[in-house]
Image (cartoon, one colour):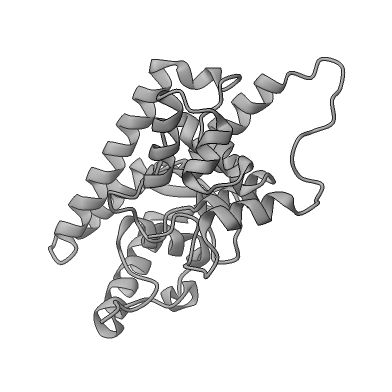
Length: 265
């Protein structure tokens, strides 16, 4: 599974390096009086973790529709290679290569020696190593504990929902999942960042003035389940046929109500 998004002929390192070398207006801000690079990295790192959501480890399964490094980079307007370094610093990204690079550094290898050992470029080697300056906020056990607890709670809610999708209690488990995914960084089909809060049986999306009622959510849920049963997937938000469908659709995909494409045979 490729955490950068859909499979491409280009390797993830080549993708990072090619993206990082494109001259754009993104990247390091101009220095100003009072500019604190460590504080800027801190803020970006916390946001990267928040938007990335579920940690990536190539030894474990990760939801196919979970945010990718590229999608997070687009939201934060920085390059994928920098996002990867931030996620590694936070303990949210682990692959065979990242583990190898870090193990070599722990053994005392220099950057040049790691390049020779792995065949990676200097930029890629550095991107596989955590920040040594800045990122101080993630040294806080409180933040780690909160992120870990929330991840486990959301994972459990998704598992419970999937187990009860065909039972009479499905809607109860659906709403529980929706509640625990409040403030989770979703992305719409048009690539727009999306979050919501839940209050008094209504969902308030940050991109919509009017709330989506619980009754509307359940109507969309029943429609999604019917289409999923008939076709094996729900192609897009229009198929839900309800108010707020474009916002409910990525939520349904993430928590396991339906799939975006049919299972591969």
